Length: 264
Image (tube, rainbow, N blue to C red):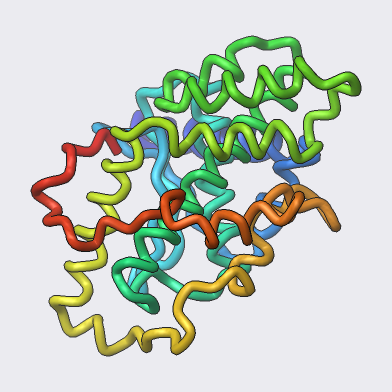
């Protein structure tokens, strides 16, 4: 006879499989699932998480996505999609934050988070369009990115062709990420804490600093929606971001304790 714990484990595995299949059924999500399999990402449920999902990439533990066992199904689908986007980002980038200066690490963190949130809003819209289930759109609100979803929705609805994977909705969603100072500061804080922890340990010896720093060339695959469709390349958006000192103004000079308490 199987124990209650064993039955629960089977139920969780079935749930993860169902979530993965739903994401894989989408145009946006299929590449992320394929890269997740290629990268041997471990996915598991955890209790008492502060967020719906989290991605970690460590030398000992490998790549892992943790899902909050207390979240509803639709929220988990979108949250897992967000974290799989991070897996895809790291796959193409090939570097970690400690390969750069703290200033560049903060810029990188912001760009990757804004892109993952824009991607998740697109995934939510695609699933809503396929199923008619409004819960997918509401999931972004539960994740804390309702404003980003709204920016995406508004852009799609104002378009004449209603194509979800055209650049405009993703650009608006990406830009919306930066409009919430609490969100930006919380990720700055997270980045500074994580970066400093490594730099103050023996692990710093593993990370050779990139000679040229963070460049647009390193980020050329970030923002891809499909082959030959990268919204960050639309009208040279990424180049404009790097040329605007106010858009990605670094806050490396600030103490982590001076930055707002994160909700991450």
